Image 1 (tube, rainbow, N blue to C red):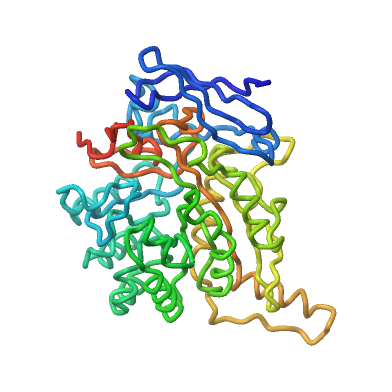
Image 2: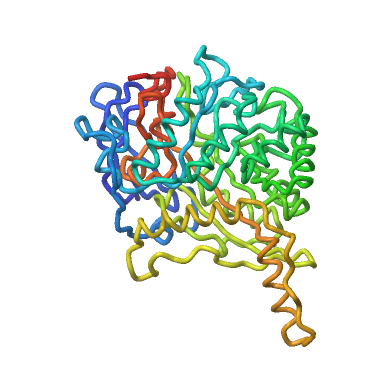
Length: 452
């Protein structure tokens, strides 16, 4: 017995035409079903098991772009820019400063290293900084690629942005150069780098051989050591793939906790299918948000519970989850809510308040803590435990989160319009992440690789 939960729109995975779609409940699972007049019907799992999607989702008051850069003519997803109908403002902007890469990963959002695209010039980056200020910035900036550390002038790019008022810079990196070139990392830190969004798929090299094509765990660990020396925050970012590293989730979390406080958290990304896939990915090849939450509880032997995870406030319910903790001296984790809740369980979430909270939270808790100042502990035993908690919250916060990106089979227009992560496109537009990377089964894109 199936129930229709909601009507929405999607795209045909073969021709990318916009088509009607619906979210359908079948048992405890939710599927996206859609029908193309030319290429037939499609059905894809988007939510598997508990917590139920109906319990997880919240009503939101939209936050439309303050300064839309594109008019809405053909409709979503073809007029991204952002257009006036987008329902969430920007939290993080990805600047792809190069398409060069020193890895050749079978799975790559950017299809890096396979194009002749030139590095984004300093003048173009300066123009983007100004454009972002003109449309409501400063926003959090993620320097991405390709592998952005291949640019020798990356410190200059950060300094330039800092001088214009951008106060949070995150580097999306595989960590290879940063592991071997300590002086370069030191220059990035001096320029104003806050944190490294480190590609980190597992705790043994067989995982990296399968996902990245070579054994590179040693380099990942050396980078973490370098960041410890310089006090640069690190977020571990595993791409989760069934049969490859899903069973390593608990080990990744334990490794992260062992390297606190410089490792600030883990941000899981269940695999999505961008690129060429002549045969549609089967449901068994997908991992949904509730499965990651349940796996964390099981694989950490209950150290972390699914009840401690919260649904997203800034983006769509099926996009993500988050939980925040303080690691105490005995290794235990105390669950905390670092983000003020922009609403309540009985009231709609204010998406504008949520996006402001999200920017602030990432900037504060994904950066390395200032460990130079210490809280003066009082002698009274009645306050000692509280003083310890306050001090540990300042230095030893730990964030667990996940983001499930959409592809041509799972794309939901309602969800896409709530995207908060936007890519600076070559034609001067801000494009939601999943729209920018969207491809049909043959790997043909609407946005990536298109200019003008």
